[in-house]
Image (cartoon, rainbow, N blue to C red; front, side):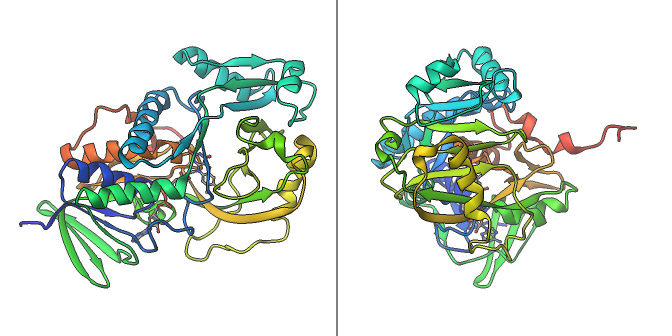
Length: 383
Ligand SMILES: Cc1cc2nc3c(=O)[nH]c(=O)nc-3n(C[C@H](O)[C@H](O)[C@H](O)COP(=O)(O)OP(=O)(O)OC[C@H]3O[C@@H](n4cnc5c(N)ncnc54)[C@H](O)[C@@H]3O)c2cc1C
């Protein structure tokens, strides 16, 4: 069979647009299908900012991926001429003997990452914006910062198109199939054939992956923007990106003031209520604002002020909160990247490169074994 495209990408959000970019720049004929606009605000990649940090305690193999991700963000800025990445540094606050500070310190020491530990008095002097309990200390990482997600999806898409990719918005894939000769994807406009399929459908990947026996939980998350009473101390020159450990083990986190959206943005990094991506509640609910205000009241009193915006977004959680990037176990020519569990955006540049490697060569040199589906297989006799 002679296929019109080498690869079809199903979903053109953060990961799909990055994959299209890398394949197109390698001269590989690629088609990406997106059910909504490119970009849009009904998935997981909107809200004007995403944190990027290197002291990753979640798994040692994320750090080499992050090093490559940072390089690719700078490369994309150079190629496009767009500012996509700001690096005001990151301040993480938590119990001196807690898992959060212990984890980032261990990651920084293991990988030789630049950082400073700040006792409570030093933290109060250098970062008077934050009020923390007596047993908290700070960890400052100079290479942490923020990415601008909508602009990044648009830039990956724009550069992919300029390199010859075929991208189509408002064209949901209705079904796909594969056999040894290739893959077929049906939409309301017709049927497409290709050698490979890459599934990057975010919160909608559940249906694909559910068939593999890995439950993905989609959750409703809220983001808020407030105008600080003392706004000058929250400017990008004075305020880093930040995260504050909470008694439940999760964190509140946020960003300095940015021109992309007025106000001081914060959110809670804890999976919210389970939702269905096709029936998600995108409107503000009672309690959304109060939840975020409680953090301002407790920890950032100078940022209290009028509410400017509330947005809703979705996490797609795997059982262990690590991503899934792998070949489909039942279809040799299909690759899946999903379950980014609320921390995937910073990796999207390198995930695009990994997926392009997999689609083009069937393998990648990047360390992604720890993200494979085999980790969910029960060991014999295991519970
Ligand atoms: C509130 C919030 C805060 C976050 N903060 C951070 C952070 O600070 N740092 C960080 O690194 N990460 C963060 N994340 C996580 C990160 O944003 C996500 O992991 C990442 O954006 C997921 O990208 P994706 O490509 O999988 O999903 P998406 O970007 O949502 O893309 C999936 C796309 O597939 C499309 N699609 C689905 N089904 C079909 C179909 N049948 N046909 C065609 N198209 C289809 C969808 O419309 C969508 O555009 C956050 C997430 C949220 C929600």
